[in-house]
Length: 68
Image 1 (spheres, one colour):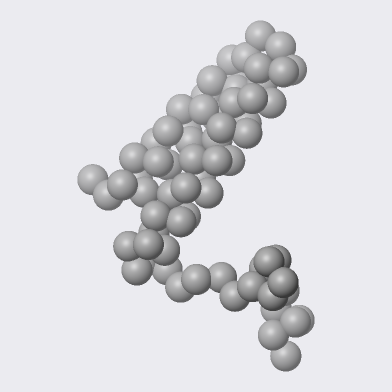
Image 2 (image 1 turned 180 degrees about the vertical axis):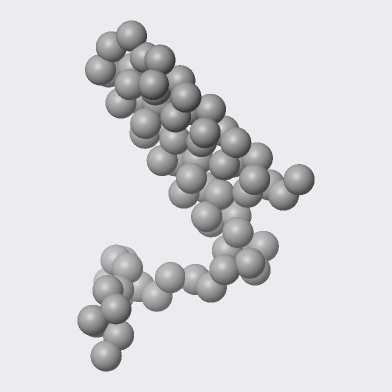
């Protein structure tokens, strides 16, 4: 199993836990954790050479309209 797949499994687990959260702060905590795991999986795919890096300008991702 690829490392990024493990990260995505963790993200799915956090999403499931968020659905079962007893209160809003807990829900939002799990949703932040889910987003972090998904970002980590994306970065791992980049590190493994499976996806191209996202072009950036001044520390932010470029929109397609900015590429022209």
